[in-house]
Length: 113
Length: 214
Image (cartoon, rainbow over all chains, first blue to last red; front, side, top):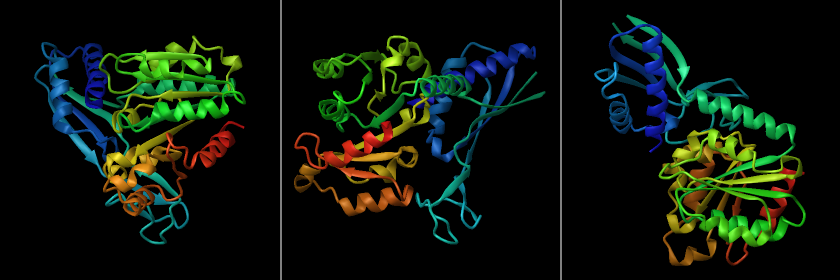
């Protein structure tokens, strides 16, 4: 359900940007979600479309890039992708980790004319 | 024409959360964002904790509920400041709703502020409220697969309370599976195995939460 709130905040950014840039039509919205955000793309897209209906972004395509979770070991500096929820270094098994990617909730750009 | 934005979609929530966090730090108040499924025992946790600690610390509570003030009613007897936020269908609290109700508390006379989030394991974990830390509550009746299915909250929480351990004999809950999944996600996380209704395991929880305040 958090998809709805995220879609609301996204639509505000999209519409503000379109107005500022003088776009008559937004054709595409490019976003990036980390896997840890647990957004269901279909639900998100449905919510976004409902919110922007009858606006300049009403026909925009939504491009969602899902980013896998990547951590780095604070002990041996190894970088690794997290699989099966295992948050431990693949090299030394240490669990002192920093996150490199996987919690993104980003709007990259919008396209329009 | 492509317009680069590169911005966090929840910027507005994050900015307000940062403000809340700064204000609470200035007032030396610990804010605990309690997250669980519906019925895991968040309100009972607060009842037990107030019984034990309300004489020792100045406790405040923000009750997030979709509708009704039933949880707040259960805490009335402790004579502590309680504010209810009804989200009217919303599945989580956000930093704006917290910021608005902070005015209702006397922040110079508060040690700890418990926020009982809306019962839900996914949505609340995405919205920073400005809390000092998140606390996950899970009960054995929900099954042992919660960490594996909702890793984010178990990764982000500072501690986990496993409630209703007295019910294990009547369920298919496997505590070894639960722990194995939990510690894969967050290996050092403190885990309290408790029964809020029967009282098991509560002393180590009281000790831990006291350490967080002091």
